[in-house]
Length: 265
Image (cartoon, rainbow, N blue to C red; front, top):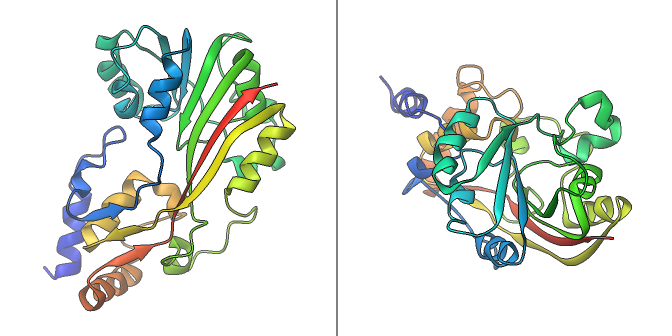
């Protein structure tokens, strides 16, 4: 078996569960933004009675909020992750509810909440704090479930950075028809929904891969990064990536992080 095939098979053999990227340790590294999102959530939660975490994944990040006096509820839209998150969060007294994820924020202009059937399954004004790490959300739904003077804290990832190559360029995919998630886009969308932005920051956070197996594993975990990714159909691209890493020592992918702290007006 050649090196490319061996690395692809190695990545495909790793179980994918929850939102755990631990297997990439030593194979890939992402630049971190200047803020610490988990610390910001912890500080905000200390002043909230009821918290909602949208699309918690396997509950990995949310579990680190414990112990807390705050009543915590999480949603998860990927069915295999629901029992994983429930098992992780139940010991802390946190609840997990299966709920369909919102469409990508940049795609929401072409659909409606009713069409997509992804309303949050909670009564209006049910939470003091809503948090969202790396998942889409309906700004109108976040506002609806927030109590008066409630707070929305979100960290999102995008490809607005300047350093590195984009996944689209690398795999020859067409540009996203509705553009990319940026700080300006997110701020505008939230303000139109009735939020006041307390803090908005963006940071260039490229990701560096040191071997092909790391690339394949990452694209299994984050399939929306490359539309229709298939290790067989995309083998020629993977061969090129392997050669690039052999020559340059790494593959650097363009990336960014956006942080928004907004209040319900």
